[in-house]
Length: 214
Image (cartoon, rainbow, N blue to C red; front, top):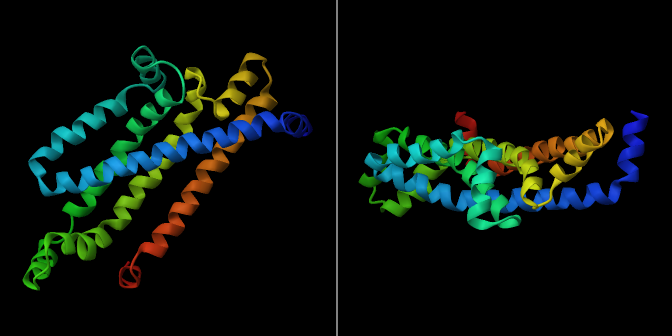
């Protein structure tokens, strides 16, 4: 433990810079991933015949080993932050897309029909009925994507995008287990912190009636 603390404080500048880079990569990738997958999930829930091929494509990307995907992108885009972001966005899509689709399509048809009977438009149905009822599914997908993204972002070091993977890799190269831990521990803390924030957002966004019902 003392060795770890000594390493952590002696390399604090490196770890702090890598930590901020890791937050940046993870946050941007998640924000863009949500911006793509959430509307796409709503779209395939409306046109269900397209759901299987579209979700299938994102599932195929998910099966590609992380390091291999980074390697495939380098000849196309080059090294740097953009390559890392594209790879992380690709990995974030499937959990959000699938959970959004599942959340909306599992809503009881009678509830939707009741809304239509009250004269609600498609947009009103989405905002006032479908999205609130599907929110627990959607947030579960986002939280899964968050943990996945934060973990995979450690591989960004191999394309020159920085992050806490730099610290871990330096520790591996020098056989310094304390430095490896000094890079790995903040990744774990960051994943847990993001998950807690999203859990808090979910609680605040969920209507009181649904909280009581659940």
